[in-house]
Amino acid sequence: MYRRILLPTDGSAGSQRALEHAVALADEVGATIHAVYVVNTSEYDELEGNSTDELERTGETALDGVQRTCGRVGVDVETELRHGAPHEEILAAADDAAADAIVMGTHGRTGIDRLLVGSVTERIVRESPIPVTTVRVSEETSAIDSPERALERAREAVEEAGHDEIKVVDDPYRGTSFWIVPMELEGGDARVHIDAATGGIRIASPEN
Image (cartoon, rainbow, N blue to C red; front, side, top):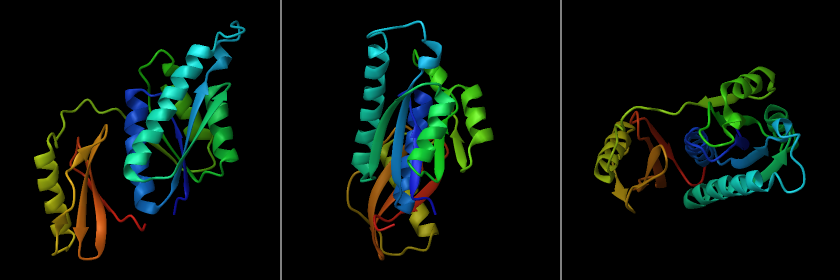
C-alpha cells in the first residue's frame, strides 16, 4: 500500500480538497505526505532580484496550511518549496521523495493558479510512473452540513460495518471537504472520515 504520498499544493480551493483527500488516505494507510509548492519561474523569466518573494511567501503559507491540517489528524508531513516549470518539478519531487502516489487538484483559484490547471494535471497523469489521483472542486451543496449530521452518519456507517460497541470520544470537526468523528469501537480507537459533499465514509484506525 502507499507509504509516501506527494501532494502538490497552491493553497487554493482545488488543492485544499486534494489535501483533505490525501490526509484521509494517509491516515488510513499510515503514509507520510510530502507536500510541494512550485514557484512557477518558467513563466516569470523576465523577473529578477526579489521579484519571486511574493510567490515564495504564498507558497510558504500554502505549505503551512498543509502542516496544520496534517497535525490535527496526526499524519506525518514533509514540505518543500521548488522553483521551475510546475509539471517538471512535481514529477521531480515525486522521484526525489520516493513517492508511490500523487494526489492533486484539477485547478486552482489563486494568482498563481497555473500550478494546478488542467494542462499541468494532464501532463502529470500522462507522464507519471506512479498512480495519480485527481480531485475536483465540488460545487455541490454539502450533504453533511453540521456536526450533528456528521455524527449521525458516522453512527450509521460503523453500525453498517458490523461494529456493535460504539462510543464517541470527541466532537466531530470539519476540514475543507470532510468531517472527522473520533470514536471508540470494540477494536479500539478509530476516526470516521465523512465526505461532506457525498456522505461517503472511510473508517481509519490510528494504528494503520
